[in-house]
Every structure is written in structure tokens, then in C-alpha cells.
Image (cartoon, rainbow, N blue to C red; front, side, top):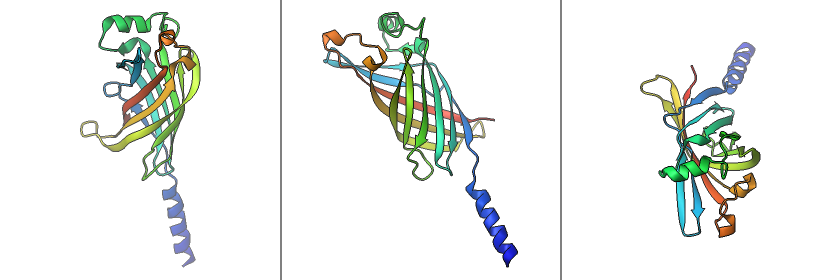
Length: 189
């Protein structure tokens, strides 16, 4: 009887210890986007077309990390002149700061899925905390790659002037920006 109890205890401890799984961001299905004020009369929306990164996820342990890099030269407002201005020294200055990064810890797990990321955004050479709420998170087997893939839609806000990006402020532009990171990531081989 003692041997059976010891075996059950050992099995229980083995199943409780799950290894974190790495997922690589799929750049063909990941497009961080944003919304920002324009003169207080409209909201401009844009996205970034080139993103890389990874997610390390331990569903059973309720932990994980996110590390995303965004190519700022891939900005896309759907307006070529505005794209060129945004990458110039007047705003992002991509010659000096070619990428933004977001690194954080997954948290507030419910049923094996995170509902929040507490992280830091580095933009224009400045790093500040930015929390993202995860509105959607799901993992399932990829039908073609035969590996698990996960997707999420994370949402948060920050003030762009905190990062030295205060263009338009003297004209009454609001400095708050809504950031969405719509991401899909595939389990690493």
C-alpha cells in the first residue's frame, strides 16, 4: 500500500510540473496597431507590417513571458506622406530608433489562459511600463503545421509624450494612444 501511495504521489508531482513551451511570433499573422488623436476632431489608425518575437507559456503553471519587436519603418497609416513623416526625425526617427519593443509577463490566468500582460514598452529610446489586457486568447493544433499555435488580442493605452513623441501637442493633439497587439505564434520545433 505504501508503494502505491508513493507512486501516486510521484505521478501527481510529475504532472504538476509542466515545462514552459516556446511559441515564435508568426510575422504573417501579427500586426500591432494603434489609434491616436488628430486635432481633437478624428482618430487616426495605423498598423505595423513587420513584427518578430516569441512567447514562452506555461499554461499549467500560470506563467509566461512575451518579447515582441516592431519594425517602426513598417508603419502603415494607409497614407504614404504620413508614413514618411512618421519615420522621419520629426517623429519616430527610425534612423536612430528603428524598432520598438514590448517585453512583459503574462498574468491573471483563467482556465490556462492569461488575461493580462504587465510589461515595458521601449519606444524612441525610452522604456516605460505599459499594461495590456488580453481580450482574446486561444491555443489549438495548427491544421497544416501539425504543431500548436496560439493567438491573442491585447489592448492598452499609453501617453506618447512620455516617450518624447509630442508632435502636435501645442495644437491640442491628445497624447494618449491605444495600442493593440494582435498576435499569432506557432510552437517552436
